[in-house]
Length: 179
Image (cartoon, rainbow, N blue to C red; front, side):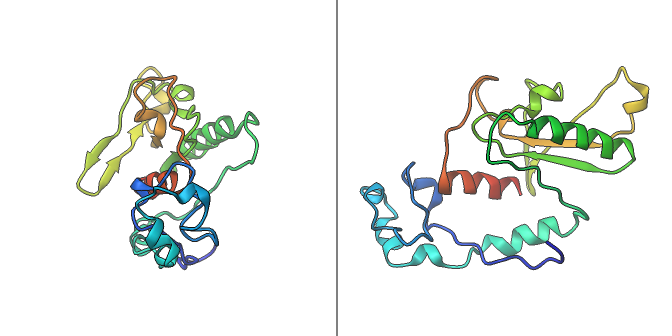
């Protein structure tokens, strides 16, 4: 998408409190679906509050304004090499002297930390948000000038084999924080 204009984004009243099987605050069934029963957002979603324009949208657009090019590696199927492709593409671009950041939003099976030799690392919280983990290869003189930052859910799970099974608003909220 060219330029800095973004399509309107919708948000729930309180995404962190939404039921795990939330249909989405901007869907036709918001607040009315059987999965909405017991959700603290049910009344607000049924009244259309979930269709309000997201106030974080402008903040995200400002954060990404300094990013010259954005690439998305995406597939609707697992096990097709998205993470492998992303890691290799990141290394190739960084080796050309470009500043590269990889955002791994594979909530159910984040593998980039393992692929990049970053297991056991963790992100650090700063005033401006989270700071990524940088790939560093001290044994490889050619890679010393490579700037490759990585942000992954894998840095936040309690173990290397753990995954977050989040959907809908919870997953979207985490992606917003990463951006």
